[in-house]
Image (cartoon, rainbow, N blue to C red):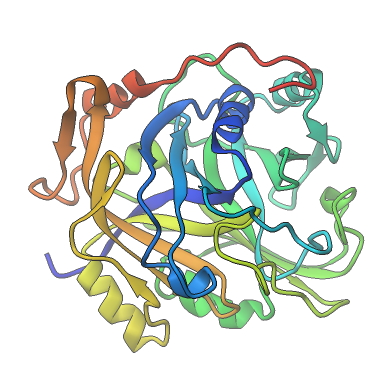
Length: 361
């Protein structure tokens, strides 16, 4: 096969101060309680984004098995991660908001509020007619909980995984050269300019913006595409102020949403396409690279504003860690989704946290 395949958003990286505490928070509040990998290898390839040298780190890929993308919970082990000097303002370049799916928006709102999660806005209706509200995690990252119809399984919970994010950009039309022309987000769900009620309560939310919500007309297929599901990206451009770069004068892995990662097949074809279209890869691993319990080929490029986009061609995934049962994806039909029984076996890596308590982890 000579063409690239994009199976979906695999995860969004979250830089935190304590990976164990963050995993428990995301597991008990947002149902991301399956540990796909727990990697403590030293981060060497990303030195150019970490002050010019490698650092010790811990990374946990946490998934919600009702469907959607995961959270790569990322912690420095040899330095204290740096927070933003000034709070994020909507439209700052980088990942502003991670979008999480809900099958019962009122239930999600009431449950999270009862648990003492910081709720930034009431339930409102977005420009596409879907209801949503916003919360903040313990690391001052904003998440949008939003109605969505693409689900993999029903565990009786009101919240699933990630299905997109809001990316602050300086020029929407320029940014679409990557997100539409290369990554396939070619469906314009809305494109509006003005002030917006659904942003009320968010930092800089009363300003004027251009907002475009993108989906993909082509159904994702192959690999873990059924679990990852459909996804959307919202590009937001501030019209009232000059945006700041969220990771300017900070390291990759510092506090915040550090990257957007796609699960793909045929890295070589993707690398070549991106180079020809003006988005060369800045980092590229060996073709077979161990990531804790998993293995694959991965790399990073920058979007038009320097936001890091990761791509992972997964080769090996641990299904049952205790007995060292793994699945090798390299010899499978790249367009054929994995059978449900194999995907559901990931649930055997579910971590049983104590029930969440109000104002506690």
